[in-house]
Length: 130
Image (cartoon, rainbow, N blue to C red; front, side):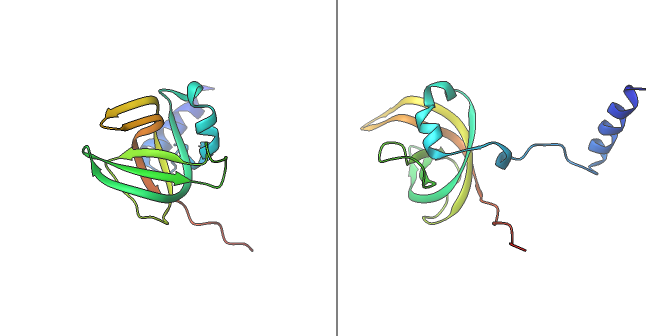
């Protein structure tokens, strides 16, 4: 009878009655944690929520977005993200992309740590307090 629950989960998921996908918000990392643990995160997709503090659009067919979340120190409080998407300074966003170390684009664009090919989505609104 263990097969029945598996079949029911598959049927419910196929019909779209319930979604079983984990959201990016379930596994958010802080800006400082990504910077401090970059070596162990290389090649992995990470998700971070924060505020957009700088945007450089259209450089080398990508947009460079700087995100901060209030964590870290002067060396670890900023996360640079490349994306086809963009955002505005002040936007609260959730980014998800692949961690890369020592990315050299040439012409002075050298990044010790970068989150590449990221998706940029608006951050969910804070839950209302009862």
